[in-house]
Amino acid sequence: MLLITNTLAAQNGYDRRIERYKSQWENLIPNYTKVQYAGGMGLISLGLGWDYGKNNQWETDIFFGYLPKYSTKRSKITFTLKQNFIPWKKELNKHFSIDPLATGLYVNTIFDGDF
Amino acid sequence: MKKIYISLFALLTFTACEMIEYHPYDGRIKGETGINAKNIARIEESCKGKKSIRFVMTGDTQRAYDETEDFVKTINKRNDVDFVIHGGDISDFGLTKEFMWQRDIMNKLKVPYVVLLGNHDCLANGIDVFHEVFGEVNFSFLAGNTKFICLNTNALEFDYLHPVPDFQFIEQEYKDEREEYEKTIFAMHVRPYSEQFNNNVANVFQRYIKEFRKLQFCLNAHDHWAQVDDLFNDGVMYYGTPNVARRQYLLLTIKPDDTYDYEVIEF
Image 1 (tube, rainbow over the protein chains, first blue to last red):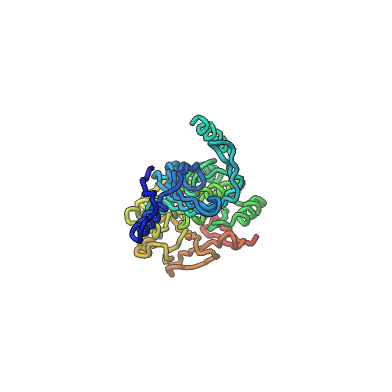
Image 2 (image 1 turned 90 degrees about the vertical axis):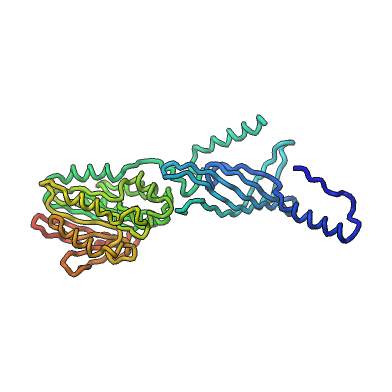
């Protein structure tokens, strides 16, 4: 996603306000996407998130998951809100890194009348 | 791109172990299913022709896994019990695994057992799991000359699309023409006048069940303690089973002279 922003320094109060307003909205754009297998939130879940803090150790994710019906009457859609803290990240190569420890809390709900 | 697929495929190898859970309510049932039907066949076979039968009742084993294990061990020490009735609330939250964990403990019983539907078992998609693991929510079986009619009476968990109690089922049972069937016992999770029962039909229910052949008494669970009540002041006793966490169970003996014995046993 490309955004063309005015890189010239804000000249006056009005420009500075516009800059601040635009950057506040830009901060709401998620920084990454995630795919989650199982994890108590569905067979497969797709999510977006924001990372922040020193070394981007803090993450907040939102997932939508799909759960097949198995022995129940209907397949289901689930929703998860997840908060993570990842103290250490080790880069393996240009494409992959490994998180030796990931901690977090999440709440999950199912979009269905019975839940 | 290829690397991503390789690593995703490698992750799938973890599916073999028990640590992967799709969802607490996923309804992925592993292990034995159709328990009630199988055990009813065993009961009817082993009790055929008997004029005296002795059975145990328990219930509300929800989350009391240790006590349920102890209960199974203590019943297995006896050699005078024909079968066990579980009055319902085998799960506390209707979670898929709860049904399977409890089934695996109860399967260690030497004698057959049947499980009724409790109100907690209706939570979330518990009924779907109950259907697969145990069977129908209304069922009956003939033990010797006594028919046990096991009903779903958890009216508060259903809307009017699903009649609870199901009087069509009760009528079907009433039309039972078998000669061997001489006496009747009704079992249910919640008893009339409980907050869960459809009390609009409490009197209608009682009137109808008294029409059955030699109604002995009724059994219920749900209230978590041993109860002995002439609920409608008409001589029909309602016996409630304590929950297994109390370390008590009901022992009932149906005798050939149309009387019966009842006892609360501690373990």
